[in-house]
Length: 474
Image (cartoon, rainbow, N blue to C red; front, side, top):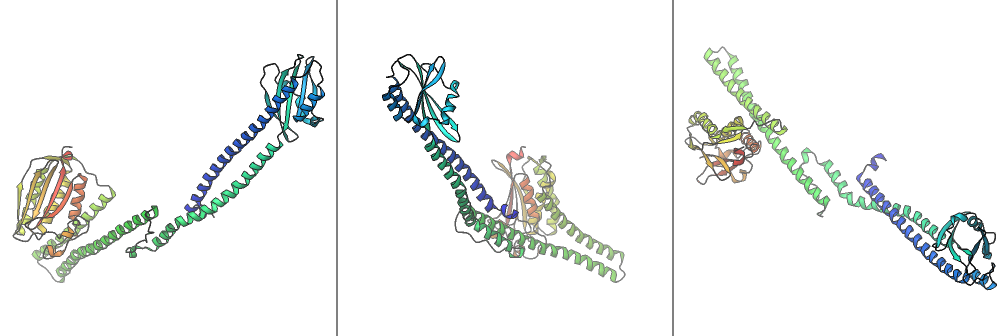
């Protein structure tokens, strides 16, 4: 039961019923108030008319205290009427309709003479009395008779019809509200169930989708409403998860291969060295080989840790003014030996002295990764060039090579982590996990810049880094 009351279906229905109950209570209170006011107004208008008629009859009263038979007959026709005269400072009943003989309401009225307004010019007064559970409405009218006496006229009417009508309205309201709420709850519960049924199906189908079944998609309800947009969003999310899982699978396979290769080389080198006695020169060569493989493993692990720290937000750039052209020249010089070893011509075409606000260490990493990538994919005898260019709002660094270029379908993916382009581009196996460009793109993004890849018209690839000038000037 507790779990049921926590469901969205129940809460929606409950809130709907609470709002409906509040609306019905307010509406009922206003309706009852308006009905009571209308009934009382109609009732009081009739009493006022009878009061005016009674005054006309009293106006014909002579100097004697008692009324004439004609006056008594006319007053009797007006219903429950009583008249009091003030004699020697005391109110004495001089006329009382037959219906009021021994009526308890008269005892109530005469017992409270001070509650009745007196004096000429006083407005008519309407009062309501409750006597033995019955409601009485009394119109009090004052008159000075031609004989100079002060008459107090009471027009009395039992509010039985009005009270009965109001009671029937209240009873109907108190019966209709619970019935209406019950019907609304059941109807709202059914409608909310129908409205949320796609969500229930989505929950059931989502439970069936596992890491090994990410190719599945949720069925669209066919309506472009909140549920339809939710399904579209979840399908996009599942698609992104599928791509991420596929990327992780590729990474795991590539990382396993890259780690297995140097580890196997180390193991084989050790085994061969231990098979028989080796000269010091042979042992030194074996240790150099092992050291190179350890460097490969260390570089791979460092790149993975770097990306992990970047994802967790623990990498903080230490921004300060740095000489960008000095960084580019230093990296070109540092890669000269690597380029010469592969018979590749590496040169700096244009240099623009300029300072930007950035982290010098990571800017070296960007330029170094781009040069490593260019040299790696350039065939012996090829050419790698670096150029700097200032445009209206950016400062650009372009690294181009004379290699086979990048397949068009891979241009937007070369900066994805763990992505490796078609091996045919390098015409042979090129080591690496495809992390260098991903790291470079992350660093450039932290500097509010952009990194783009394109193919040169004459062949080869070109990578362009653009730093916004506002960032360059701090």
